[in-house]
Length: 489
Image (cartoon, rainbow, N blue to C red; front, side, top):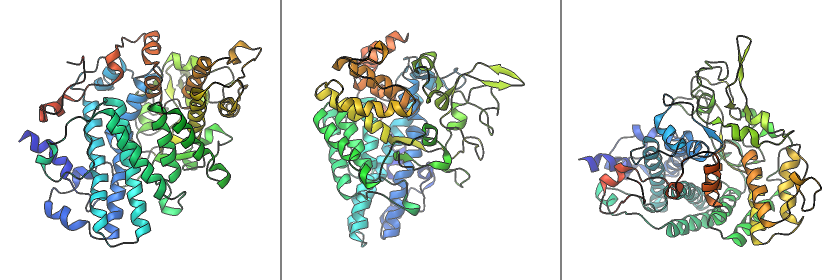
């Protein structure tokens, strides 16, 4: 019975549902429903939208990504146990296999993958425009690749499911697959996607995955797997789209995060949120990131919850005069005429429709990220004093109001005289440019710097903690094929 209940989430249909993050909990469990629904192009549109909607789940970009990507790192922390013990455990490296956030991430991401697989398994039988059919396939392959990318970076070896699971029994067939095989599938999906996705969208389709998004994510995957020439090649393809009026660094850093300016030319792929919808489609970040005890002073509507609170290390990371600092974080707020020293993240401030219901999208891929990844890839291929890698690094610094870094600068703080120093320069620039966007922990692990940086930060980190424990609930379901990561109880 326990196995059937847990695996039943893989059978839920996208029928009669939009792209709400919780639609899968409301859709009926009915084999007749799943068999009869996917018949028309309109049905497939609903199914594709449901796959996008999975990104809004708690275990994906609603909560888990910033809690793992930033709170786990030296960028931010969670204020107290009352805010969320499961996140505190992740913050202080004490998380166990029964951590509810990790269970949510595993379950919600595989639910999203199931929705992608439903589309891919059913769409060929539907009579519809071939170009649109190919595009839908490309969109869900991009989404599936993104979801697997987040899973494999978090847990290591994971089950690799590429077809729709139609019965509980089928679920037991899947054990953990090697990270190499998972990455091979991610790369295959993204290669397929970049060849069929549109270069841009208009109207109601704005926000869907584009060929540029597939290329950018593929470049990040190559960078993560240390295939630096391939990473550079793919990221340069994104940069080469600029003359086609596709991407740019917005002149004003603040404009990147304004809810009135979403899906702009620096945005490559965002998770879309919209407040005031029924059922809720809004984002929680305004409330999640406001300090506990601030009432509605910071969040305006609904109380602050104290997630993703900037550390003192993070505040100190900004150079004097960095225009990004006051846009990204605040050192406190004013209450009854008194300053309260309570840091908080500012990038996602909006006036919510109600608590946890704001308009802020979550930026997954930005053009600034692409430029910094390209600079990193070029440096890994070979350090060139004041070469092209410096140009891309300094584009980001110039917008931030900072002086460029060079190989022979008389200012030691601006001098980058070796490959190793350039690595640290890119790491620093990514930290302050992409602060509180869910990148820092994954960057530190990718570059092999997590143990050194987090130990210096005062964390009790051990080597096995570079990946997280497999949720115990998954091991209990299928102990013959799902096993725990080393050194976790």
